[in-house]
Length: 156
Image (cartoon, rainbow, N blue to C red; front, side):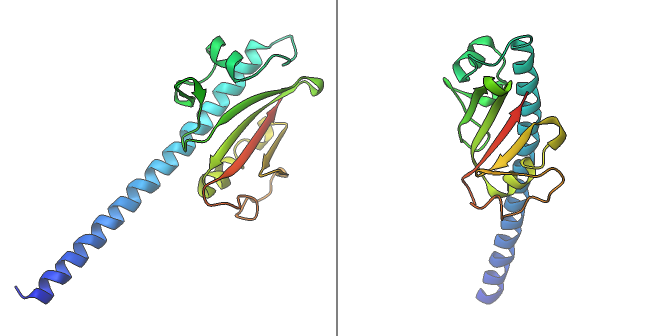
C-alpha cells in the first residue's frame, strides 16, 4: 500500500468518525430538548398543584426545591440548571396570578425548538426579551446567540 493510499484511507476514516460524532451530538441535542420539555410540563404542573388556591407570592427556586417539585434532572447540587448548564429560575408574578420559568444559556437550535413548545399551555413565551406570538415561526431572528439564549415561560 502506498503512502497516498494510506493517507486516503486515514482521511476516509476520519470523515466516518466525524459523521458518527455529529450524529451522536445531534441525538443528544434532541434528547436534551425532549427531556427539557417533559420537565417543564412537570415543573409547571407541580408548581400549580403546590400553590393551588393561593397566589404565587412565595415562589422561588428554594421553595420549589424544598417542596420537592423540581424534576431531578433540573437539580445540580443546590441549584437548578438546564441540560446545557444554564440557570433555571422560578419567579412569581403574584399580582397577575402567574409565575415564570426562565431558562438561561440555551443553544440556538434548542432555543428554536423550545420556544415553540406547547404555546397554548403558557400565558406567554419570550425569547431574549421578545414575546413569541402564538403560531409564529421561531428562527435565529429570535434565538440570536449560538449558545446563550434566554427563554421565559409564563404560566397561571
